Image 1 (cartoon, rainbow, N blue to C red):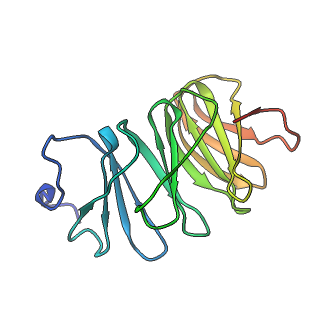
Image 2 (cartoon, one colour):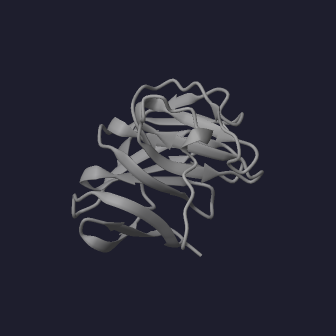
Length: 176
């Protein structure tokens, strides 16, 4: 119940003490630990043991999501986005036409992925076509979380509190 805590740092290979930013789980209960300087580890036993994964990026990962097909999407510093359809063994880079940090993401009911970040950036990915459209929220403030309300409506949380955003049905964003 939180009355006592146990430090588990010895289970994770992190000799330089990089920041650990996010844990993501997939449909098979694999865990992915994302962090600074491209640090990524995977656990297949619910965190008892961890193995370091090779990533194609030396920057920080701030978040990740697993889509409906089981593809792992990780993102972070300077708008970098990568996906892996083989549980973190190999990665493909994706261009989002932004240099702003991406902080959080969600998978929509229709399978699209929405990532949000600094300066109000909102990135919508259609995995089937690898189409990426980038929008900017009118507030232009950092967004730290996103959830789907219904359809194309999103609720955003960040520096300006709670805000809404509707993904346009016409193509008005910047194509990545």
